Length: 322
Image (cartoon, rainbow, N blue to C red):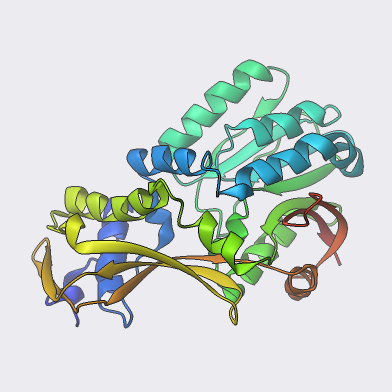
């Protein structure tokens, strides 16, 4: 069903209006859809941190283990005097590991759409790395960004994109983002990208359906945010979280599912949901080594190094221009 006032969303949106516009446009689609980037309000970010601690959610600890075991080798492959550009504000241990291991990095450029997250990241890292030029950029990293120049000339620009976040994009979007990396790293640059690898379906589905229900709370918190910020009246008790692995598409597909026929108000709009109707809120794509190499090639990049865990569940890939 189409929201009764979907056409009233503003064209020249501010960031708050972007949320309203994206939600109402998503409600008018078939199937309904809300971008996963809106998961991360303050509560959503807290819940995601809890997800990373769940025993079923192997991704964070596996990638961290790869970095801890191989960070010296990664830093050597990248070389001295690098400018590190991170997509998203990396205030966590992965960023610290790489900055600490690099040979005299000249600067750190976190690209983050949220000013508050960006400020917190830079404040924490600046205390630990006073000799590294901190150059935060408030921007959407999916679009090309004019990168600031550090005081000292960099020998190469390195884009750091951990966390398998690339998998949240559909293939065409992921290739476009890799092309953006290719442009921003320059002729002699490199990228370090974390990707989740294809594996047994049961392992994959358990990671997104933890027994404690934290992922369910995280997913449904999106409705809480819509209620709070867009004056909506979603009844969270009448919606469920569902995540399943689509083997043909090679991705986890996460939906919010209506438990009954119901009508929800979002501001002045009314949106109908049928019983068992599923609203898509996230893709989490999984790759084989061959899948990822082929996708990178379409973006003008090639895989030059790969670091994996002993189970071959996750890979950290180093890319350069083809």
